[in-house]
Image (cartoon, rainbow over all chains, first blue to last red; front, side, top):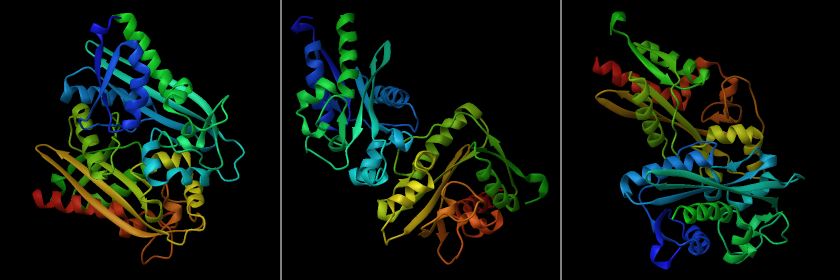
Length: 190
Length: 190
């Protein structure tokens, strides 16, 4: 893809960390992101893909420009998938400490971070998914990233997401996997 | 209101307990409920009223008949309002035990149950609210009701919601307060 044919996509979010992570991944695919903030409607559903697509269609109605919406969640096996699609709300209310308290005495620390990225680029509407599994630590470590990053160690790693730089996290993260699939798809289209 | 002028309203829910509680309250106001199950869209928001109204408008689009939607939640002070609007999801994943674990060692057991009932009776669109505060027990008691009823004791009572009959619960409950306000309003209109 020639530099002159770069695609500009709005990322509908108020989260600068998400923007930074996504921009670094998508840039080599010829995609430039900018943050757009129309009111984001999120439905209550078990499926991140459904939440992301409903939000993306809603954002399209007010923005009218090609856009993506990222919806992510941490699914903890011993907690029946909690906090899942409600990870942001749970982070804001219970925080990292609440999750650790719920897992006190629990041997099964397995969890997966998942992302669904919905793309609206009419007439196209698509969702790209990414998943990274790992374990929940017994105490928070690191200060980069956001949300539950300080208590999640991806499989095959010895550090939490919050102990990694953006570039390191982007080599293994759920969001990176979803964004790379999106990037490859877009690159193949142009 | 004469018996011949009773109003039929759909209650959009899959929860028979909600139907039973609401029917008992609304019957004296000349309102007959029936359960209707179009797909219920719930948005993620801090406001029960907003969630209920968006769900009610969406249900109206597919049902096309006068209807109400009840959205309720348990707001626990020491947990910054958690589980709030996501009480159903939290009940399904963490259950009563999860809430009790989060409150272990916590002296502040204050909590409020809240309900918002959205009415769509074109051209009317209104929301009626109800709130009952009380305390979270240290262990579950009783088996009637549903959700977090076994761990909530309303102010001025010595028993949990789950230790009460439907009629007893309807004397003090958040849902009853919202439904009675709705009932009074409808009765005043006809």
